[in-house]
Image 1: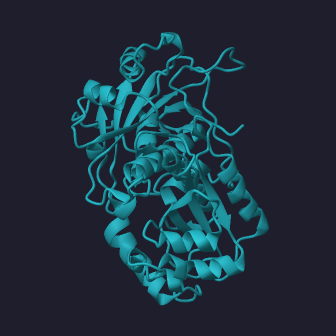
Image 2: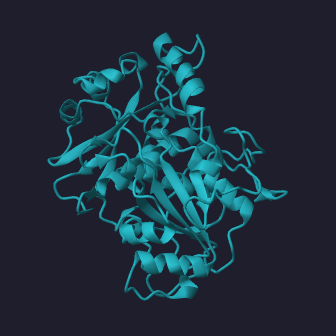
Length: 395
């Protein structure tokens, strides 16, 4: 649905653009149906190859919720989050991965991608229901693992408190958390890099200068005011009809990716836009050498999603932020695409070095994902999707 040349702010786009990090919560717990919806969003999230090496656990047992803040602060790293002791969230999300048996290629543990995607989808489901959240990557791993009762071989990569935000002195939240929120939202998270520094057209280094950016500030724009319908399952499309993605749609997609949360608001996610099946075919030939691809089945537009260098490279050795923050931005892209009526395919396992060389990506950047986008073919489609579609819904 559009108004003039710009898509209306549907409920899922509004959830993406209005999501903020909150560190103080009201004492009232979410209703049971909201908690069930969060669990459903966690269990229906797509994963790399359908292997589900990572997952999101919804923790709402009062005993566990009461003990988790001190577990987070059990070590030196966790001391950077003192507000958590006074935040009083009614529940937590825990993004975890199977370190022992999870899918991996060399040093790329794909549980990071699975858990980051699922975590952001649950965060957006919460945002659509008026719930606040905050990604926390600084915590004492052994203490959190013990309190949460994780399975053998699982490692946590993020702790996410969730609850109704405490805004204003009569909200019931702690003044420490409210003050922290006000300072962080004004001085840190509101300072977003301009789109031309985050996106490139055709090749790395050529700034993406959008014809029209829909919202200069988050949440500003005409909304359709539709009640929250729920996030719903995300499924890759098997085929595209070839119609191009419009310039306004592309601007919306990149703007939604721009507002994705990231470690220390570093905004390391970058996107190279490839338009037209000729450009997409050249990209896929570099990514999947020796693979026969039907050009007519390829999407009309692709995004190569990269990670810029960041001084804090990883939470732990096998949990690099480029495998967490970029997939979070990809989750925003997929939700926005579905709201715009676009189909998608996503690949994380391909020849990253060949793609970097093809696009002129500097050595200090990391190629992470390829996202194909376009109008899906109506009706049933025979045969499996093309090779790039590696992100699958659960069986």
